[in-house]
Each structure stands twice: as structure tokens, then as C-alpha cells.
Length: 302
Image 1 (cartoon, rainbow, N blue to C red):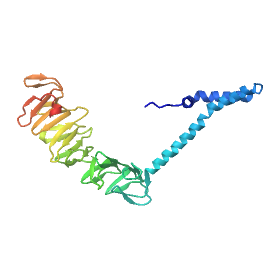
Image 2 (cartoon, rainbow, N blue to C red; image 1 turned 135 degrees about the horizontal axis):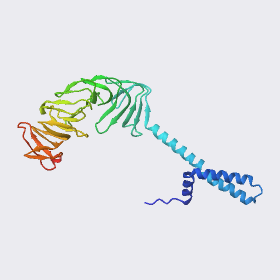
Image 3 (cartoon, rainbow, N blue to C red; image 1 turned 90 degrees about the horizontal axis):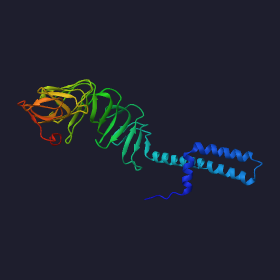
Image 4 (tube, one colour; image 1 turned 90 degrees about the vertical axis):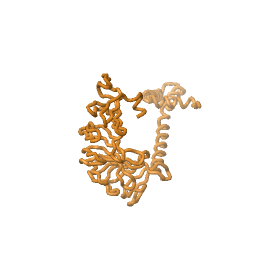
């Protein structure tokens, strides 16, 4: 729907937009009228009027901006609350001075919390800002120091946790065995649940031994692991090479289905009696080491 804007509004807009022209002209007109005592009165007042027309929009716009800023500040204040005493909010025990940001004026949903200092929340010391994640249904924050949480050696830095304090993601500060994998320091671990696999993102300077494949996953890849410790998938935006049964495979999309590995070649390799180019999808039977071509569009069907 077209908006009918009055002509004078466009003039005000152009006047303010090109202030670097309008203001000097207004000043020149004002000085001209002031010093033009020998001019006819109508011409002098015309110069004053033109100067006023050019200058008036600026204080008017300034007033409107001030009113808008006051309204914005009032709206923002209505979505904030600073605790004057220790209190539990959204399931989190918070100390006095914590500033809470809500999504609505009714304060029914918390968006984030600014902590006044390092705060002990259910056994973990966090600093800075806590932010609610609607996707993971948990909190994201910053650990103030290296801590052992839920048996994990978590490194100071980013951490995710549930309201009751259960850690769902952090970076390991030391070697730690989890689901049968000896994860190196710097590994970012995201806890799995009934609908989601565990995720192990390896550091950029350390690989990981994978006994089921009799090989080592390259540094920087992410492993998706089932709750029973079965490797399900390897993924990497950098497409590092991983050797399985002597076959160079691309870790960009690497699937493990039972005793079958399905992935694409990282470089040309002999498959079914013929040299196949890189990116050819292949299947490796881990029990027999047999290599065959994968089905068409294997990355969608596997």
C-alpha cells in the first residue's frame, strides 16, 4: 500500500539530509538580511524567512529524536530488572546486582542475564552474560576458570548448561575418556540426548584414535557418536583426509552404518578395477575390507 507523504515532509527530509548545504545557506541568508539595512523591507524579511525555513527543521528533528530516545529507553527499562537481593530467577540462583533482560513486559520469559561478578551457579563459576538458547533449551555462558563439572575437565571459556546445572557443552582442558574415546585437550564436547547424538569437535592440533576403524581421525573434524559409543558420522568443513583400510577418504561427509563406511574419495584411487577420481562415492565393508562404488546421491540416501 502506497503511503501519501505530504510535499512539505519531503522538503524537511531533504533539508536535514543535505544539512551541509542547508545550514551554510541559512547562515548566509540570515547575515544578508541582518546587514542589508539599505534593502527594501520586504526583501530583508524574505531573507530572514528563508533562513528560518531552512533552520527550523533541525531543532524540530532534534526534539523528535529526543522523544524517540526517551520512548526507547522507557521500553528498554520495562524489559529489564536489576536484583537488589539474591534471588532465584528462571531456575538460576542469582546474586544481587544481576541485571535480567526479558523478552516481554510481563517478564514471563528471560532472554539474558548480566552477572555483576564471577557467580557460583549450581557449582560452576561463570562470568559475564548468560544467554538462553531456544534451540538447545539451555543457558550459554563463560566459565571463569578451569573446572571439573559433571566429571568433565572443562576449560575456562564458553559453556552450555541446563537450568539445574547439568553441563551440555564445554571445551576439555585435559585428556578425558568419554564413550570409549580418549578425547584430547581442546576437544569441544556437546552432550547427546534421546533425539541427538553426541558431538566431539577435535582441536586443530590433535587427532583422535578410532579403534572401530583402526585409524586416526584428523584434527579439526567433528565426530557424531551414539549414546552407546558407536561412531555414526564424521564431518568437517575443511574436508581433511582420513585413511580407512588404506583408502584416502574425504571427511566432509563420512558415514558409518553398521560395518559399512560410506564416503567420497579424497584423491584418485583404484576401485572395482578402475582408477576413480576424487569425490567418487565409495563403500567399504569393514569386515571384509571390500571396496565398491556407493549408490547415486549416496550423501542423501545413506
